[in-house]
Image 1: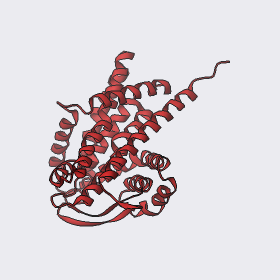
Image 2: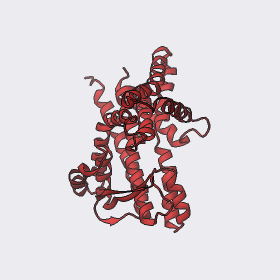
Image 3: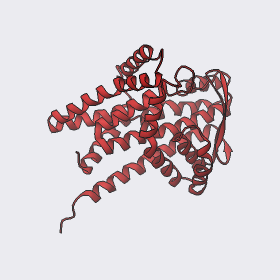
Image 4: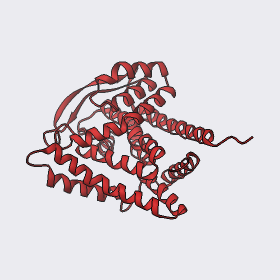
Length: 311
């Protein structure tokens, strides 16, 4: 088990690598993982016992790469193992990618370039954006920034702190399968049940730590009220607290109706204050950035407290 000072050092290196390089431009490992997951889904998502088959497919997708990386970090020399931990965190983190995908949406909305904003938003959300107006696009971008702040940044950091590189990889792969299979549609309702429930379990603590961080770094009273009153109405037990707290912290309204897979869904409204616009997309990204700084500062504090005091 790695010491807390070493965890902080490796986490710092992973955050720096992510900030400099972002996600790998070529041969991203998630591309191969996604193809393997699609093959498993095509093979097992048919016939009877779909929940059981979904659990088997999840295990075949996630457990082998996690066990292999765990074996490598145990077997490799110390410095090589440290490098692997950093690479695994880089793979799991998406802070730079989150900014690179969402900041251009804010820019396109500010320039009133709706076709470009629709195109960019469609790349990061599963809802339909072909006829979305400025408000709908702004809400989608703010929701994506707040929710993926947890999924792509803070959840990975939490599990890296708990279980180092293999833990971060485990979280990222499980979260990816939830994004692929965790839909309540006829195709995935039963087969994707395990992927959705496992992701809920892995995200339960990180999501609430993220929601608390969002509240602390903005309008705290409003954020906590929105978290308490609005989050239980959201269908996701983790996205609800994160987005409600974030929206309350920013004094912005998100949620509401959206079209998914050709059907209009009447989602609850989250937050308080002004309807979302381009400026709120930017402030949501800034909130994620400030939260990352807060988490990094807290990791340093924990590392210092874990060092034995010498008289």
